[in-house]
Image 1 (cartoon, rainbow, N blue to C red):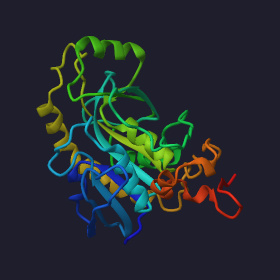
Image 2 (cartoon, rainbow, N blue to C red; image 1 turned 90 degrees about the vertical axis):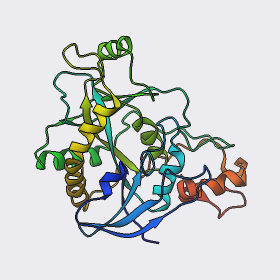
Image 3 (spheres, helix red, strand yellow; image 1 turned 90 degrees about the horizontal axis):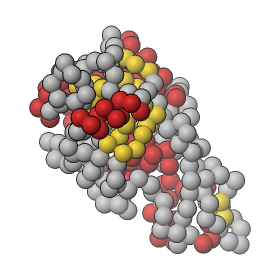
Image 4 (tube, one colour; image 1 turned 45 degrees about the horizontal axis):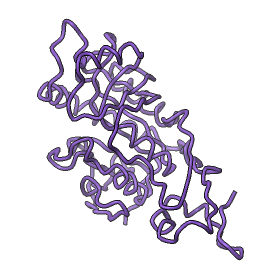
Length: 296
């Protein structure tokens, strides 16, 4: 199996780019079922990269239906240390226009029906999400977007709504009062799970619309979002290609997120839970003593 340090999750159009040499399509079994699709593993600018179509090939999976745990776990199994997310967002501010890119540094949760932790089943862990985005990866993405001539906004808050419906106007106006910058349906759960898996995560949020708050713009529609996204695919590809090179020599600043976060005494955790989470917690397990414990 090819081990890759960089993962990309987004639309399938992302890996239909010039210069990508596909080595294999790999299906990965996980304790939580199947990821959205097979991982496309290859080389981009000479670096091993793994791509995943977030909503499946042909965009078949609703945001609420996404198997977030399987998707992120699969990247972990592939050896991914940096996970680049590319997704569509609505703008909540006039200065963030369709076609712009936002690299958010905060998230706000408005979802209701989603699993967003690997833990449970007899193992309690509490990771810090005060800074939910990898500063190292966000910096690389920001620089890559600027170098490709994009209008890019560094920082800001991404509000993660449930979907699949877009906001009511009342909701959109309230979110504006809260001071959020963009709105989307997928990134928060990915960020939480990536942090638990000690993967550095950041978003390339591609602005497609003004949600429905803007008095002078038409309300957001699925057709309108997809049209802007199609126009932005080439830009996203160029930014990802440049970012892959920009990550040379960059250290994973989330590599020790679980240190001191595992609460349950190791010898009390069910064996099946430890087996399922081996790729995530295995390096913290100390089996040298008379009973299982955590390395501190």
